[in-house]
Length: 131
Image (cartoon, rainbow, N blue to C red; front, side):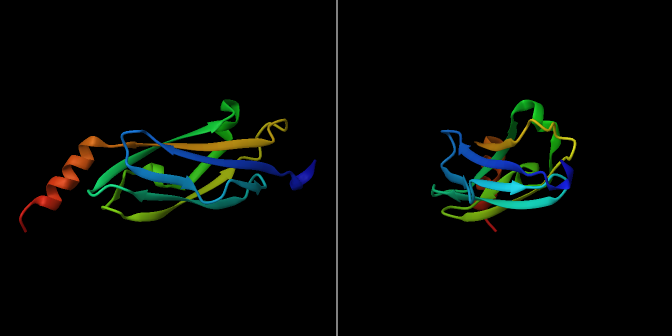
């Protein structure tokens, strides 16, 4: 099979109903070679009139392929704060491990964004505090 194996990576994203954000991948799929680093981006926009902090929870399908998908940089590593109406492009860098079983030809990277109530409350309290 050699080094010219290609794997399709699909990207997906959504938000929890309590999070007033738009969130989606900027590209639906990417053809990758295992062992090489790639980057893609996701778009997020706070559609509310106040500061909102969100936390992204990633998942990879099929489950048996998840341990072969390695994120080297991801917005999911830290909480993301967006001001009222603010939008941001958020990068993900990843490498698919060459040890990925040969019969796994497609991996799907999904994110679910949730509102981080504690950090959202703190951010809004700081913003409202007299300076």
